[in-house]
Amino acid sequence: MYQIKRETDLPPGFRQFLSIPRQSMLYNSTQFVFGHPAIDNMMLCRQGILHCDDSIWKIVVCHDCSACVDPKSGNTLARLPKYALTNKLFLGDLPERFKDVTWVEEQVCALYQSTVYVYRLYHSDDPQDPYIAKGNSCAHPQNTVSTAKILPHTPADVAGCISVVFTASNKFVPEAALTTIFRVRKHVIRDLLHWLHLNNPMYKDFQISESHLSIYGGEEDDQALPGIRDRVIVNVMMWTTCLTLKHRVWNLTRTNAAICH
Image (tube, rainbow, N blue to C red; front, side):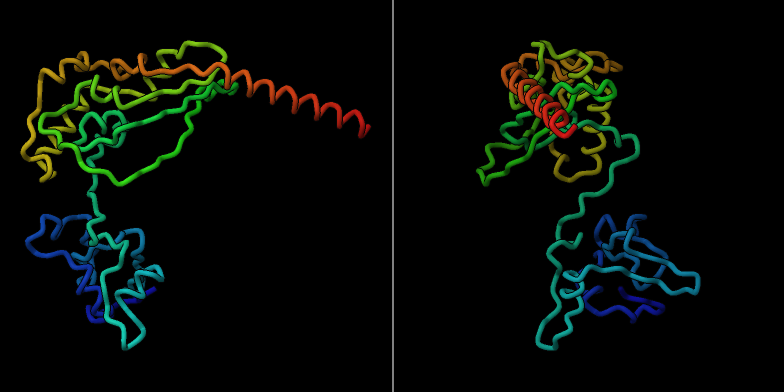
């Protein structure tokens, strides 16, 4: 932790590696103006900055980052911390109206996509949460095939990368469950693409396709990704196995209780 009153109270490595250049669009932005000249326009996380009543500011820095910007050894030069926001890790903040954007809507608007999504959906006995999703992610180095030039992606393009493994006693996934998990809204997709076109340099050259947008239904429709039901694989055998194991555990528990009594 560093305490600052004057602009010279911080090690020079802070200003050297964490400063935002004047020509940057983030210079003087609200995200990085904290109210003290020693740290204004430094790419610091606001949650790590504490302002005390006696005009003393405290900067909380993890051990790894501190060792980079403020090396204690005279033989070690200050360097850019690996996980610093300035190391191309700041992605920016979305406006409040996009806080509920679903992961499928993000994929519809993405310039790059993963090749495969396997979504495991389980039926639960809990009436408050009848469907549970489980899974993990696995990333491998691969060549980039292409970058989208026309957005949004069509529903067929997005659904074609998704497989849903449904484990339950029945063979039908309710429409409400698919809508909750794979929700897409046409007006949100259009609004997000327009915002990205104006605010993200990577999106400045793409074209918005009204013909692609029209496939997503009406402006106010709240629906599951078209075509996602065709991507569902029902795994009844796994559900039967789970019930059998649960029944065996219940019988074993009852037998042990009888022996204890």
